[in-house]
Image (cartoon, helix red, strand yellow):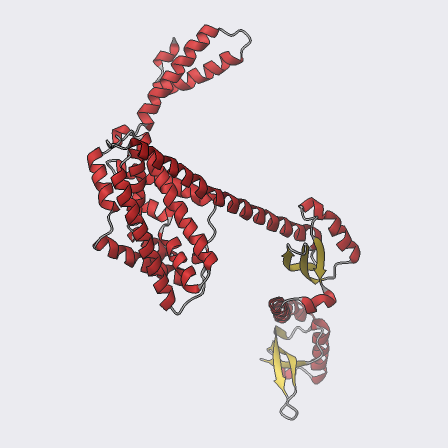
Length: 473
């Protein structure tokens, strides 16, 4: 058989193709198929053990347990490090600095008790579970109190984007916490720790939600507190879950205990906690996705049905209670027939349950102050662009006229045009004037009639009546 001369990995690939070909052929040799199938499974198991097995990198079990027990404790230096990390994270949220927040997450020792609880549940170590849970509650309480004190005394009480980002957890936060926790327990249990654990601390973000919860208490925003604490609880539960599964996958030994029935009850409660934790995040995710899809449909509807080269939609407002979708339009007025046609298209964008209203023309009185400012700003920009175009027009004309003047007035060598603002000292009136400077080798020989002729020519060419003409050598 030629496959025995091929390397093991390629052999599996060839056997997979061969098995599929036999399975799809009309004349199936069942005995050959079964033999090839069993051989294929054996090869896959060999490769799986070779590349995916964790046992070869597994550290000494006694050393791992000692490291985990040491990380569970919160006394002395560990406790002060936690308090300082909370202050750093709170400062980062307060000034909206991502770098400072990341630094606080790297300092924080909060991962210890969470991994300890997951390990204890996985190995049925009730003593470690009690100790880890107690320290977890203490660390959580101290963190929230510290953050609350900071936000009580700080003069900056505005909720920045980094802070608000921790108030709406979703199913994606569950996945991040689980994957981060899985990477964390693998790093704890292997010989080469590398930089996995710091990365897990950043990805799972235990500190910022606790600081945000403290902000919610200090400012009286209980929705912030609940959302942030729920995010922290999600991270804790699913880091713990990933640790528990990691312990089972790597076949660590259970601790000998007398009350195994009690340990099994704890595991059942753990499964219940996991289920209860994940359900609200699913509902929040569905709500956020639906809101995002709705905004996408509204923007697409405005772009395709209401906007044009002469008309721009500057804002929209959706009133879900009254089922009203309102747009503010500037520019060319949208006709009644276009509005009616747009209403008929609402169903195509899944917006048919809303009543369409468009504010334009005389409806500007209903536009908010911010939109009025936007309109005024755009008007100023348009005026400035017009003035700039006017200056550029003279610059372009100077180049064009220099060619023409050679034919009409051979003695003129150069033409220079520019705007000038002239103020009248008698009545304080002001007016813009074009200054035309012509250079000639024979400026003294140019007669008054020729100057009048040049002035009329310039006035006709640049379409301006007020021109000051100067001829120099």
